[in-house]
Image 1 (tube, rainbow, N blue to C red):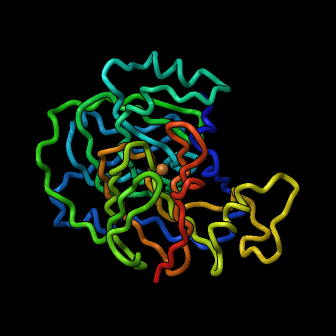
Image 2: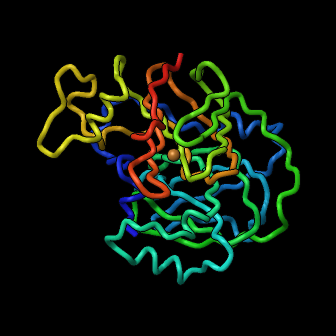
Image 3: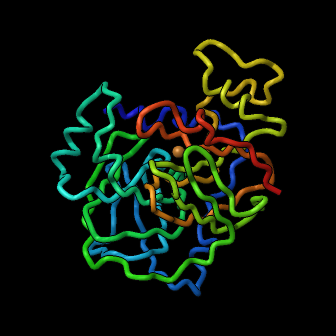
Length: 290
Ligand SMILES: [Cu+2]
């Protein structure tokens, strides 16, 4: 499997970030003192995810603390029965194949709060049913296995989301007319039939989806038209202000977001089951946050 299949247009570098970003949305809503959910602090290091010893199944307020040297762009999911470390190692050892193994599509990706920069924390509410989990770095060369014991999750309380969005092929279906600025708990439900995610990229006023595509399609050495609001940028300069990692069909997760007023390019970059990024098939739009 080619790791880049999982990145495509979502890769980002640390240098040259020219757009304003919002400070990490830590301790926003999911972590209110009245929360009925236990807290789970997951540390991301350069070697993988570290869970507290003896973590058992449940619906958790999750804090992803990025102690690595790369952005925490790192999916986490429960492997299907029968898939073990050896199968995962074999898949990651294959360098230049665009084939995605079936077990990867069948993995129950939890939709972890994503894209904290080094030293940042991202938070949300995530279900961890018992099982064997795989985490991997989409921007860094690691993967690791985490075992979570315990019982199946039985009728947990429903988080008090302030916003919601459903992911389908190939669109975002919003539960409200607008996304307000400031702290919000966003419910993200994958009600489609394949893997998705959602990422919010701040863009200048007047930017259209065509402008963003022109940026992503830019060949090395070329530059954007001068009337493109993104002129002067490279695709690496686009970094999400809020995002989840891969979320599987039938899974719901909640992420704390804290967007500044402005315009955002919202997209799903995933190419599954095989093909172009979902963004190019319709899973992209510009929203205005007020
Ligand atoms: Cu998608």
